[in-house]
Image (cartoon, rainbow, N blue to C red; front, side):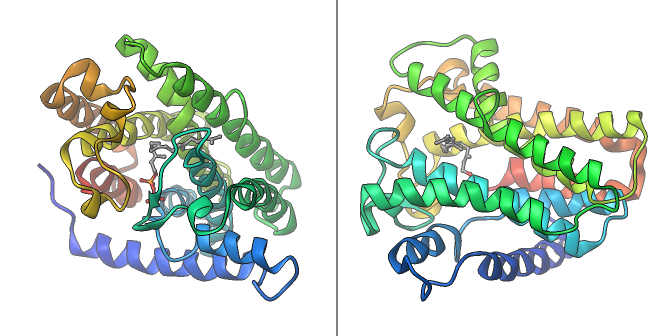
Length: 300
Ligand code: GRG
């Protein structure tokens, strides 16, 4: 099992705190009307979460020599979409959960209608951010970034994956069916995080982009496999969200389909495939490789 090196901890902590500051600045102040909605938006986004997606945006941006500031803003826009998805996912009409990031879910702390609006407003804010800031010297590339994130969040991406997930409750899915669901539900936004980072920088050749995209697909899926393993194999206190939820909700997962051991082995296989895809970049892909390790080794 690979270990997380200390220079990666330093790199990731510095980016996490920089993203945190950008998110604080991008979110409307809780003193501006409507104050309750703005307070709830800040509650849902700030002070929690691993910020894996912005870290991926920073790492892929580094590979394309992107300015850090651009990747922080692009990463923050992806995190806003992610935060919206968590708020909506926790609602009683979806996963019906009471704990997220170690605190009461948004609809428990506020109310259901507010949580619904928080998700709506965070999604709009993500695209406003992508349109407001100059993230590429080429405005066509910037429009492409907006299109990529919209596609990843929509019915052909995350929202579609969530629809398949809701429909799968009580059913047994085959591994290809599970893969299809998670490539959409979890993988699409992770892939977009990497695509946006690359587009903040200089134009990479087609082969290099494909390498990064293959890496993105592998770690997007690995992320979900590990999420399923942790749900089955960890505690609520460690996760900061309700553990054992998938089995109790009768949801098909990699653990229910393959078993715990083979699911862990699959995560390692996906990591190896991801590493192979970025090997030709050598040291330039150091942070991407370390993030892949972090994703498969994380405990929460
Ligand atoms: C409601 C349209 C809509 C979509 C919801 C992402 C999602 C789709 C649901 C979340 C449910 C879930 C547990 C998905 C598994 C993978 C995942 C996204 C886990 C949470 O992401 P982390 O671990 O969370 O990055 P933090 O809190 O660290 O940001």
